[in-house]
Length: 292
Image (cartoon, rainbow, N blue to C red; front, side, top):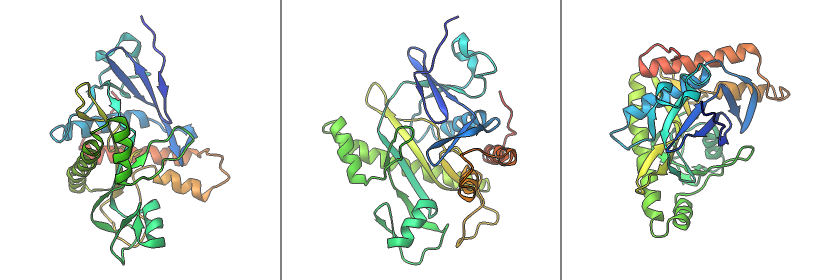
């Protein structure tokens, strides 16, 4: 049996090269404030993998994506065991673009903090009088750079994305920048409307895209998981305050309240976080979570 080692390890995922494709393994690690916490969250990797697979299938009419299979039977023998089952994705190889495509439908987090200072979010002027957690008149696209582990992502303007992509693909910078923006907003609109029908508000999220061998834009990475998005329950939603959350905002809030924690979570926070991830999955998909 051929053995494999990760060719890249991110904050919460491992990437394996298996020849003409990649295998992305979502671990149970969790990160906050660009730091990997010292605890694992039970079944987190499997929930995120299955949630991404759900969204990739739901949006395949909007844009092609990189997912080939989440069944380890379709992968080399090395991956056909409990360590990888349920949490592994066989994916097409892409040339990933160095832009995180962030879309915000509601004003919260760092966006709310910026708005309170000068009425803008990432340089985009917004109407006066918005309250915390308010739904924006229309979703806004606020891209950022992709940072290495330990570094912080940097918000950039749409114009800056054109420059970055033009350097990489002369003559096509504006074409790709516009495609990233338009597809990000289209994906968010479709998925946010669906989520509302399932009782969940998607306040904001991020997408990542790459190019296939023909230079066509393809959706990659993960999609609309609690790690890459802010999910709020629709029931009880009220602007003018922070919202209870299905995502890792719960972990962020605990860390803020416990600055001396050294990024070590108590068991009750781990259990409640795992339950939040599971609940979000089941509400969105309408299916009971079961690790494959």
